[in-house]
Image (cartoon, rainbow, N blue to C red; front, top):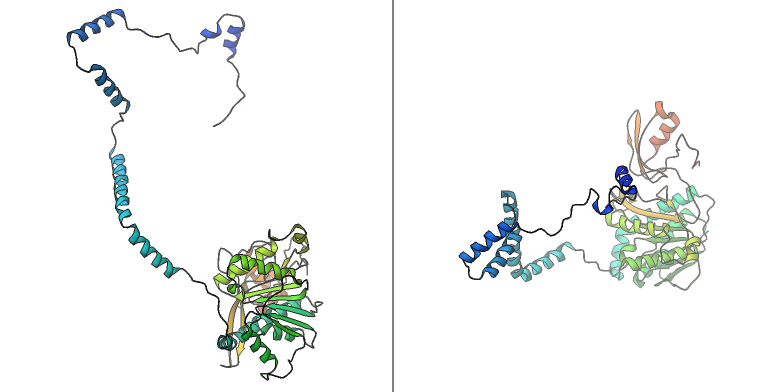
Length: 421
């Protein structure tokens, strides 16, 4: 309701009242009257008729008729009648539905069980660990090597001396980190996995399958749980293909908080490139960037992180409402002697701010004269660019032609100098 306090009296009426020409009680707006009475002749005539034709229960019948008049409605159109008929039909059907409710509930629960994913943790005994090693070791190693290699390429001054891997499995991270930073620079590898059988397989791999041989890398330690009280921190913290094993969102966030507290420089989280996995990766990303309420006030500042890869920004992921953000990792399968590929979703965070170039989020479409690029920019937007040698110059055309999915494209906005690399 609109309220308007800017009102004033009509000028001529105000003037008449001010000069006492019109009494306020008799101003032109008054419409009320004293109680109205029938003319005497009309009243007398009615009285004669009532006496001539007396009627039994006159007062009761009068009250009933008044109620009827009070409750009357105008004639209803066909459309109104049809609408009411539909409403009544629904009401009657609902009444019949109740008698079948128990049967319907049974069918509902059966259908719900069919369409609902029933989560259970994977129990990695010796046999299941062996199957995992055979099936996933190549892909796990390739994914981690790909991520760690990017860190080394973009941050050449970074030289880690220790690492923590939660959910270490068969130890692919140990091999990947030492391949990227060789010459035994890594002095401590702390591997956490709840499966003792998986730890045994990882240790045997390091020992060249010789039970009593020395591991090929020094400073490797296996544990079945992560200490929440330890204050030790690590240059690199890895959580690869593990989030799906956590029984709830609350447990996942607690784990992420613990891992983030133990991170000195880089936290690497990897899952497969599915829609469901991407949702977990994005959940982890938002948790770290938004400084969850699980953090104390002091920690919100000291644990402030930034995305290093794959996003060139700390804003909301523009892919959450579309296809998942993932990348393809190519490997050479020693069993089939063929190239194989795997899709992964990753999030790599670090403590320092890191302005970045846009990243290619899909393979470029290349022709003789132009390159079609799909980019994620530092402003948090998806961008489609067509690069030609005539428009952007031969140098950029050649750079774009040599670039592919998940690469950074070293470009900047022509109107801005921010983000120079």
